[in-house]
Length: 296
Image (cartoon, rainbow, N blue to C red; front, side):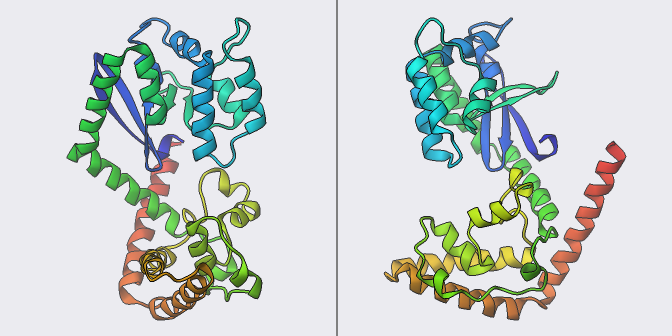
């Protein structure tokens, strides 16, 4: 995880670490907890997580944002929360429920507990309403900070460069966009993202995860495709938005998006500009891999 992070700090009475994971800024609960106990910051976090309302809130957040959340385990915790015998820690919550809203990292200098802003603000409010307001103000200031945004953009480009040449299916490797089956044309997809996935890759995000269990631990189908497919994907997103505005049903949109993807692939696969970007990214990948080897 270390090489996939962008780190920053804000000042709310004391330094509060910010850890960017993917496109989300996680706030250090450990640093926030020092407001209540500078010597043992883990204790306020555990006390907070013993509350029934807090467990209910955490469970609701995960239910909305985490498709792999274990609702059965959450139900057990919810029924026990608030009692004298109930104890909860970030590590236990993550392990038992497969939570993603809270992250626990080990490490002498950059370890601790981090949480999605939705959750971190709730913890700050529990510590002190005034403290929460200071936190929100400083967090918003950070998000507007040009230096921080440049750091994020630089990091995103590095991650994209690493991902662009990782190809996992013969269809993608051979520059082929699968032709839709009759079953795919008739199937109703719950998420619009999967309409695009099927149109371009011939599979849903779930189907890709089931075929690539190890890779899915660190990313999704879009993280592991190449530059050409990402360019086409961006074009398909724009087209799909227009189709939706025109009132086209999902089946019609899927067929048109698939046809568009195949046409674009044929036109762009030998495009000079794409080839030049691929060469540049190969050079970046080489430097990244060389750097990793030297660090080891």
